[in-house]
Amino acid sequence: MGKTLAYKILENHLISGTLTPGSEITVKIDQTLTQDSTGTMVYLQLEAMEIEKIKTELSVAYIDHNTLQTGFENADDHAFIESVAKRHGILFSKPGNGICHQLHLENYGIPGKTLLGSDSHTPTGGGLGMIAIGAGGLDVAVAMAKGTYTLSVPKVLGIHLKGRLQMWSSAKDVILAVLKQLTVKGGVGYIIEYFGEGVKTLSVTDRATITNMGAELGATTSIFPSDENTKEYLRMQGREDAFIALSADEDAEYDSVLEIDLGALAPLAAAPHSPDNVEAVSVIGEIKVDQVAIGSCTNSSYTDLMKVAAILKGNKVHPDVSLVISPGSSRILAQLAENGALADMIRAGARILENACGPCIGMGQSPKSGAVSLRTFNRNFKGRSGTNDASVYLVSPETAAISAIKGVLTDGSTTDIVLPEIKIQDTASVDSFIVSPSDAGKEYTQVEMGPNIKPFPRNTALPDTLTAEITLVAGNNITTDDIMPSDSRLLPYRSNVPYLSNYCFEKIDPQFAERCKKTGSCVIIGGENYGQGSSREHAALAPLYLGVKFVLAKSFARIHRSNLINSGIMPLVFADQQDYNSLSLGDQLTVENARIQAAAKYITVKNLTTGKTFKVSADFSKLETAMILAGGKINYLRQE
Ligand code: MIC
Ligand code: SF4
Image 1 (cartoon, helix red, strand yellow):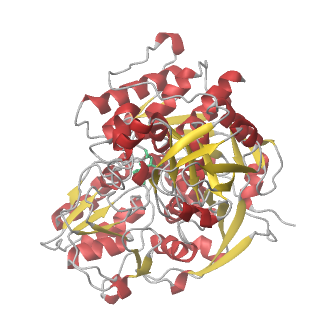
Image 2 (cartoon, helix red, strand yellow; image 1 turned 135 degrees about the horizontal axis):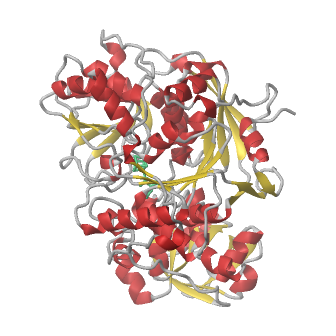
Image 3 (cartoon, protein in one colour; image 1 turned 45 degrees about the vertical axis):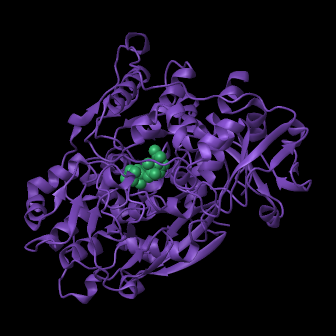
């Protein structure tokens, strides 16, 4: 039986275990990336491991999420990250250089290599034929310290691409079409691998848009073959020597296959408030638009922004619309400035923001009350824009730009505008934003620790009897934005879990933090796909700080499940989903012989309030059980 590309790369990196879906393997990690909002925790953890030198081939610390520096807190975080980077041989990308995933694709990604990043959109690197996985910060710290990562082997879902996109349809529409079919939990437990004749019609930046948003499917990662387009892309970045051709075997067998006819795709939009709530733009109709935001790690590439500039050229942004554009990198902005496209955007009335995540993570540009905002981003969870009653639609750059001119959601194929074909240009990277690590070594560089940087909370070993009170009963698809909101108000406190925890579940239940503090020992009840979205381990650390002992849910999102285990909080799944309905706020639950039960397939939970007993599935791997028993990954590593 032929091999999939994903398994070929995993096999090349295999350190232990066998490549059988569901079993646990440890793989070599070649590269890591971090960004600032998860980075301080990563580097606090790395420092705590007291290593001399990192074990990866390349590690980069990017600053892109909070670049506003509204107070000293962010500048302190950045200084801290820079100082640790210098000590350990890590490249440091200064604020303003761009968005981590776009920068990594341009400057460091290599086909066939593995990349672990403390950001859920790390799979952007799959556009270059990498196995690029998003993980919690602690896993990335360990990957730097040991050069390895342990994961449960995903199945591989093949997506067979046929045909060629029509003029106004875009890579964004491809992934929106996949999201419509598979939903936000359809990719859990899978690597998504693209193949077929349609692949060669997509540029690397198109492919990266598609693999980027595989995160919204809940997939472990997504990957494209490395071919002539990859070679051309790398050549344009001055890195042709990084190229190798890679693809699945002709007779590769996928665990399941989905077919997408690129030629049949119309411009699509994900309507509020979920990336899988997808409809054709023409079906949603010409709704009035108040704001258009173009950028984010999904759609801020040179080719995307050149298409936007071509649409805007000679036109005017509608008087009722605010159009903001954040380029993905300093190189892209320099190119747009040099070739005149930037002037076309500005003349049309676009506001140019810094090369950073910006509005995508709620750092500014919150729309007005009740507004409709079209965004080329990847997440439209309620409130993420900073405005709770705003309606955010996720669209392609083409749809965003034409709608900004028309003032209403517009399907460009209904206009007579002809879009030019955009080719990637050959320009040198802007390396002035990169700080190389100090040659002097660890002992010569002091860690710079500002007053807002507080130690991360640590759990204690699992007790024999766990008794906890239900302090929240939540529904399906709870996001990490719901658990630990992140916006311009809270992002400055990513290094201060005690402060941040006051806002835990703020949007769903403002009393949650208070209730937990009073109770001291609590449990959260969740529905399906609990913890989807971001990789932020703060969504586990804040509950840990508030005394959450375990989470019972119908199912968990991959990264959040790992983050809970890393924090020593048990993620437990209802054996019978009906039991979810029997639980209420304030119920006292107890797990007896917890240390013995944690190693079993099922755990018995007793509801002391109702007297009912029910089973939940633990199903932890050996390593996971050891981490739970020790009270989290750090304690486990110390014991080791
Ligand atoms: C996001 O898009 O939600 C983020 C901000 O990039 C997160 C990381 C974080 O919460 O810091 C992610 O996707 O992992
Ligand atoms: Fe940044 Fe948004 Fe991408 Fe997250 S999704 S890395 S916030 S641009």
